[in-house]
Length: 358
Image (cartoon, rainbow, N blue to C red):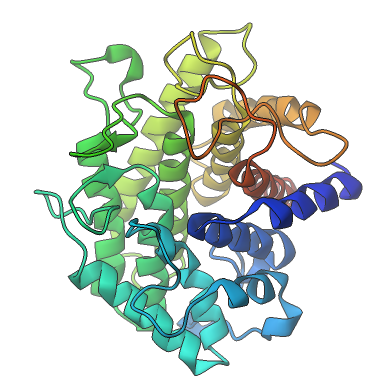
């Protein structure tokens, strides 16, 4: 994992991101890579229980995010019908807002929009879509971490509880029932709802969910309310473990395929880097957050996957094969994905931090 490779991967991330959630995810990746101490996984995540004050021009993540954030609307960017995706920019908006108050006000409007204006599923889960109730696994990386981060900003224990609960409400709907499909139990369906339903076990969707819950868990563990939120945080640990356990089991069941398949439990699909990479990053993060639970089983698997991923990064810094992020049913492996580039940076950061602690 040479510095040259990382620079090229990041450079491609800059070039490829064009959608709301891509901006937010790449900004998070830049923060975790360049300013690890100030991410939710860092030692200085919340100095004195508060959001850190950073100089925007000195933090690549924030200078990247700033021109992509709207400060005059109800959401931080046009989500093209998605309620969850614009929330992916909430963390950088809050960080920028420590020195530029219009960005803090915009972040607050985004949070309030999620909580009060977006449709809900029957169990109270906030919809990923603006106009109708529909649950997408992707949402869990975008919105709950935003709610959790605003909870720190506003010193609001109740909101942090809501952030964790939203993850678990999504799990209650999307998680595969053991009775219906024992081989996929623990993993999540991609989408349940009236318009875009996809009951497949999409690798990237499971990675979005697991990584998002890991961010909320880290926020909760570094908050002033760790004891008060013990049940919710334990629920997040169990939910992430269920996804990783099932993904590892499916991976080990196919020793001739070194990557997780685009649809994890379907051998007709190609092995794919996006989901594999983000789940690898998640395994390292959980090994640091919960080392008693996420021991050698998880880190050995992550090391193996990291090796396979590094072999598939081209001289130009692109990861392939990857799924077309705008058409997850596309059977033709893509040669480039903005999501995969961000996920690689998240993996680099997670491994560096893990190796530094080991």
